[in-house]
Length: 347
Image (tube, rainbow, N blue to C red):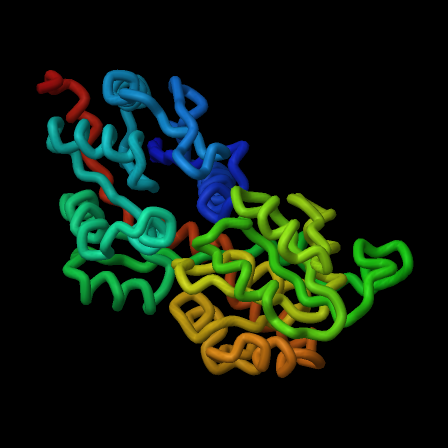
């Protein structure tokens, strides 16, 4: 098939949505599908308020329509609820074209954390966005249950995978040439955006032995760097460098209460790194009752209890998550349509 994917989140942004879509694109192409990406780099953009790293397309409808018509896809997937997502949704409704959507991000919780907008208002907007979708793809049972309770319908599962060749145990990363050489152990690691919705400060405020390390960038970075000078802020890391940071740590601490999945959880586990997190959707779905993680409201107790967890068990748990299986789920959720639709006039 020729599959058109619309996303307001795309490179050079560094987040779980971008990494998921980029990996999905490669996996689909390896299976012989053609993928057309409609992303902000094709549009005039403005920085997102409070998060300038994110660029938002300005008045994108006409160009979105032209790009869709030029691609003449067999299926349309709208990945995000930003300006491009709304423009593509509007176009599909005008042309009576079926489309699928995904719920990657708990925007209502994010907006509440940043602007104090009541959840009921934001969720009403989210329901309106997703209600015409043939399938709303979610990563976990926990998020599906939450959305059903809030009045969402047509929900389908689209899990995530992990690159177990890249993210793997690496004993030499703990040596004198490793990324944390000279730091007092044990190493408690966080990887992800440094932003208020990620609740990073809940990790940094913990009274833990050894050293806390933060890998990532974001709008809260400089503030937290000033307030927690004992923390080692390593900046953003990629590829093998990122994999070595995972492999060199002792516990992965995931303080977020708002993630729909947490791709970094799988990357840590694949690296042999146990997880400490709150018992919320995301960690509950990825880890559950497995001994590879400690899920507690007492995050400090969870981090300390995770020390000494068997790295082999962590690795084995991550091997159950593959991108091939994730891609099959995505394809099964799509709503293909007859390409003869493109002979119809635009309304």
